[in-house]
Length: 134
Image 1 (tube, rainbow, N blue to C red):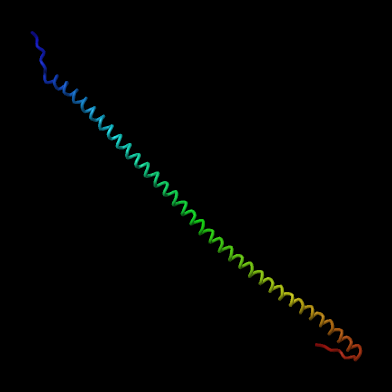
Image 2 (image 1 turned 120 degrees about the vertical axis):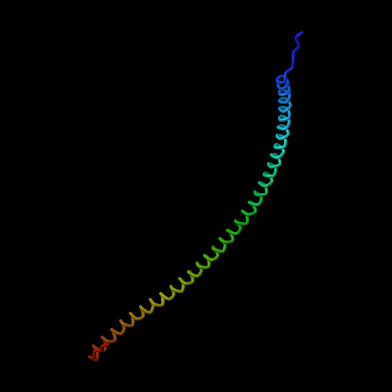
């Protein structure tokens, strides 16, 4: 009778296969657990990022309004200053126009007075024979 003997090598192969199967199933189990945990963390992180995005969007809106308000105030101040300058320039123009008119009137008066003086000199020279020189 021939007996089949189990050798050490046979045992190692059988146990190695069984161990490989057990390890594979354990690794698969751990893989599933890790995947589910990573999925949970991904969801948590996504919700946090979404929450932060909403907060940032609302803050950006607030900051944007503040910035626009500050810029508008600056423009209003500049507009008021420009209007003040325009009024000052208008007043200065009116004053200068008055001054120039006075100068022109005096020039005309002087011209008229010179003409009259020349006539007076001419009459004195013609009537009295005296020449007046200045």
